[in-house]
Length: 141
Image (tube, rainbow, N blue to C red; front, side):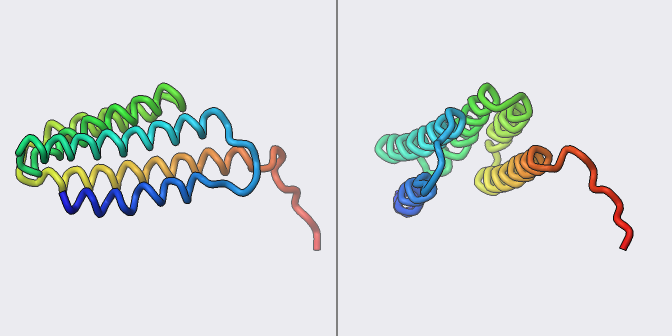
């Protein structure tokens, strides 16, 4: 329980710090992504609390976090495109694999790989979106 309390003490303030914005209008998609993320954090925290109050071992939480992650990424898939469903499938498969003793190693590895891949895909999409439409012209110097 102390671990989850520490995680929440870091996560909740960081969400509001990152969500605060100095300029520009927030889009519908941005609002929905924040809603999905905050709901995910809240459900993991409530599941951890219910897990602890029920007297379950802390290691029974790993597969549940995998399933909640699959659900969150499937919601992002419905909002942002089908490639997010692949990440949801990876988390669903990982939650089944977490019946092993290495469940948090599996969860951490899958989470890190998926976050890196998602960031890379979003960065590529942004670069394509802001790239000039015409190729640069050769110049004689």
